[in-house]
Length: 241
Image 1: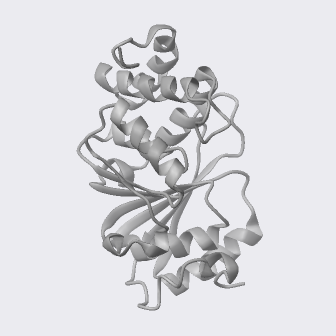
Image 2: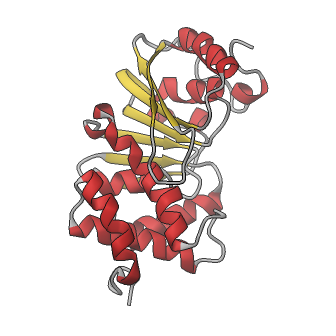
């Protein structure tokens, strides 16, 4: 019996709050429950947060906070760069079944894990791209929204994301406590990449979280042809530093 067939059991009360907040159906709650159960059962899951109640907060609620943004709810092509164990991409794929969600991850082991989560949760709108963001030519100018959570310093994330966005698209970058120096560097990098800061939204996806923000950048101009730079250069020589 698959974890989905086993039902949500004791997870239902915890998932019910997410369903009420974001307007999710019973079937979507089952899919989220499948994700949590696989995390708990797999000792090799590439995350330190595997206990179900904590994972619902740290992985699911945190990922779904982006649904408060109209640009995310309206997106039809979403790329999650540096997807890691599959967050925020997989929960967003559950919540937005008409969107195509591509999870971009360079480590083969993590790619395999994401694929197993997507299969177990019966997510037909998910594609795993096992590549670096700078080495994904099919993704260039092909996404309405790019999401990134705990990937790199913000100027680096902007450089990864800008070439992948269609004109008018948006980057949503998960950040903790605001850092004025990093934000200034990100602003300078954004101007080189055709991006513009649209908003910084303070969010409280679960009770214990503090100083949590979603930084939203819009692609207002075409990104210069010299981007993406060679793999690794964004981290080695960040823009505007």
